[in-house]
Length: 132
Image (cartoon, rainbow, N blue to C red; front, side, top):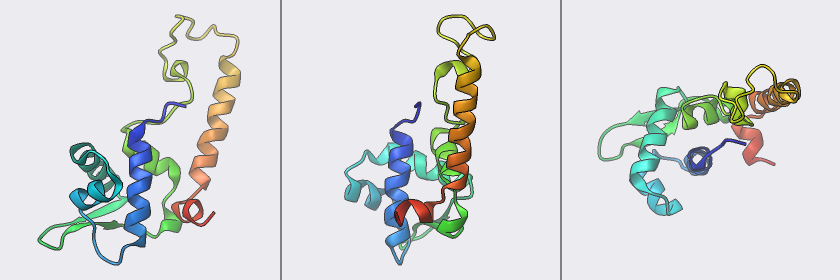
């Protein structure tokens, strides 16, 4: 699956943000999770642009959830963190490594597989993820 560390870092950060009773900044999150601060800051900014987080300014600033964990899907998080829809195989993004776009014999299966994964991610909420 073409998910990168951006999705992983987003989920790890969201777990801490959910558990906190105050806004958490990118520097604090990066330190606590032992992650690269500049990379994490970009991910958090993308989550804020995607209406998942709210950015608070000031000395007590940081990030909080914009919605309830039950209203945020993994599909939304991954799309924001990755900056694009997450696909299972490169060929589903119209860039077949074998040059067989539209003629590949397994393309229909891959499309169905992607559809099922998308539906799963669209129906799995942040609340469900962290309560399993």
